[in-house]
Image (cartoon, rainbow, N blue to C red):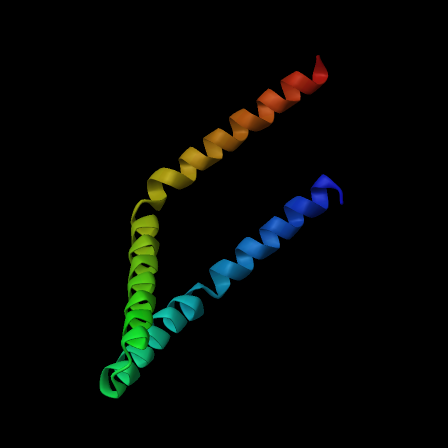
Length: 96
């Protein structure tokens, strides 16, 4: 597979993940809550633990999403600068 198609595949995957991010986050939070409530009233210890883990993973994902949105004015230009430097260094190495 050529480099162009690898980059194109990566871009498509990232766009799809960003597009479906609220659904994935909601599935973690809602699934964890439902599993926790079922286990809490049913009394299964392992299910309570699994529900808590799903809730915690969903909460951590939510916090990471909020932090990345708040810090985006910093990391997006930094990522752009790093990408440009890497591109020009690669061009300079390839030409000599």
